[in-house]
Length: 383
Image (cartoon, rainbow, N blue to C red; front, side):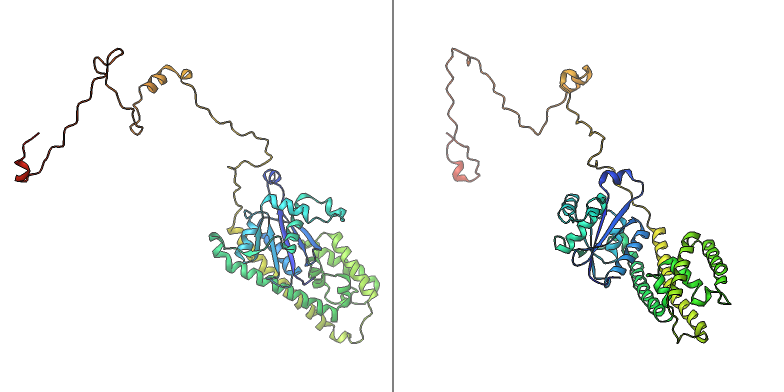
């Protein structure tokens, strides 16, 4: 686990692939403060994918505020949940995402250059955050997700608690069961947890008599139990037990760890495993609640996607008057004139005003009539 400041890029496939795919998948890329690629994985766009992303960020970062996230759109459910949880988030459009994928690609890495387009886009977004081309801020919480803020905060607390419980388990195994830590670099992984819970101390794998002939019956019993519980397939469990057996044989037994404290060792290891599992069960309960209440979001279909083979509808042009039927032409001619449009003034032709006649002289205008009621004005004669 690298507890440093990390940057996360969250990208999906191109628009054509998103339209054709029935299930939306997102690619996650995590880089460190120097731009080195730490982890790449694929998650689903649902509460289970959000929980997987949260566990990855808690494991890779130094704390809940030490991760900046950049996404290629805000129409994903995972990005909405990240916003509701108070994570700093940056949103980039498709053109900028493609530009970041080309600008921040590692030309010396053949594996990175041959990676899928969604992975290159996610790595480009993460390195754009690391280089300062993007800045992540805390966005306002969507109104429909305000009621889930306590649930998301509790989930973040359980993720941090699981990380602390996993660190405590590693320290317990380092002191009391070093062979298990040598066989399993990540003892908090589900299959390793189940095996250590079934074999919490080295002597249990050897049987009651401690002879090598008892190895096979003990291993077969554990394999059958874990396979029946659905932890993993028998081949995976058998490989894990073989690795633990080799580590027990190669690790010298400490003199202080006598048979008198063997029950205490087994109980301590089981309680440390139970602490990790308790956080896992709490996270599963919260995620199942979110999955039951938040259904899949409908995808917009009104906007035509770029690259679609479906042609755009041609605009309808107005038909000429000659192409209309007779009843439509008659109705069109009988339509009343618009009252809002100004009419040209009508000129009335007088007799004798045609060609060959001189224009008639205009009559002089009368002075305005006085309409005052004063006696002084009434005494004046009219003109």
